[in-house]
Image 1: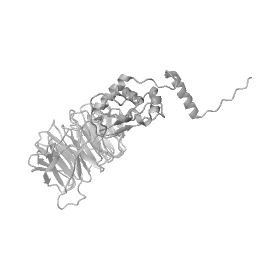
Image 2 (image 1 turned 45 degrees about the vertical axis):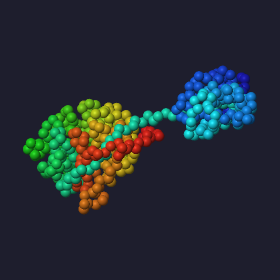
Image 3 (image 1 turned 180 degrees about the vertical axis):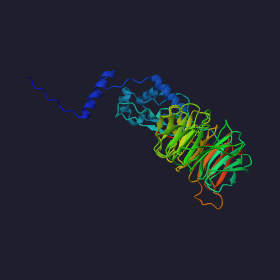
Image 4 (image 1 turned 90 degrees about the vertical axis):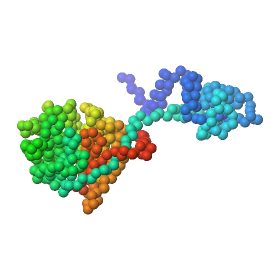
Length: 480
């Protein structure tokens, strides 16, 4: 057998150079020479740059008393392309002869007129040195058009102001729901009562008792005269608003119930709690239809939709799950958040929803749950509640009493307000636990830890001149 010749060991650098040489031999028309520049495209590009960016293009090839034939030829060649034509590979020898004398200067200090006869006046001076040491074209970054930001510009929204403070509860106000007729709203509190208030005047109309722990969830049906409540006492109750009493109770949760939602088209109720399960109840028969088990920690937020996915839940295990209501199985699990998802809010018109966590506020599309973007600021607190109205104003409330207003489309934070605690309360009792808009979306109700309910509306006197939109598009889009 013939002896196998040993293969010469080759470094990665040598292999890379071989590959580059092979590619150059294949695709380059002449070895070690660049393709000739296209004069038409260069002229279009330079003309656009002249008109868009620079106020004036001035040439200083040589002072008039020291001109020679070489510099005249150079100026004539450069004049056809508005004095900013960068040298190609064929011009490098001439540039070596001319040296620094053939520099192109852009600026207002030059008295001569540009070769195209326009004589623009500029504001900045850019010197392009044409040393002949390199045979390559100069970088065209100075000639490239600056791309506008693709980030959507936010709509202008008037700032919101507090116009009413309602006190009457004896404990933290944990939940709120507005009647579909937009005449009254109900609040649930840690004092174990549910109070019904007139929306226009803020006057107390009724107090309902029946829970033996704080009331964490409230929902009012738009198809029946029913109101549903849930609390830390593991109980879910159905109130008949004509008789003002409990007519049904739904038993099954093994621990406190933290959130509650009514399906908009089917007579079912959804509750989530500390037993890590979202339970689906038939309203009339009190039967548990499904138990959505899959979260590893407390289910603290839930909302429903008439189309798939009909149930979306957020949990302390930092995940968001979308459920198939027919089969009782998980359709999708979103793991974008790093901390517990305490609040979610669907947009009333768009097929999208937002979720809030201590790390960030994120926007997702429906029904696929595709991540859109983060909000452009970070509230840096535990966010307990959020709400969105039809005009695209999203509001979030935090544990430290901060209430931030956002533009839904762009994620721009256009207002930051800090709630003022009721006299006699501690400064630490500034948390916001529940937020909701009324049916029209023009009034906002916040439930807080200082035992008060605050109502907010837009400032009618605000204009774009008094409250300008200070928006800067982000330089990078964070995908996490």
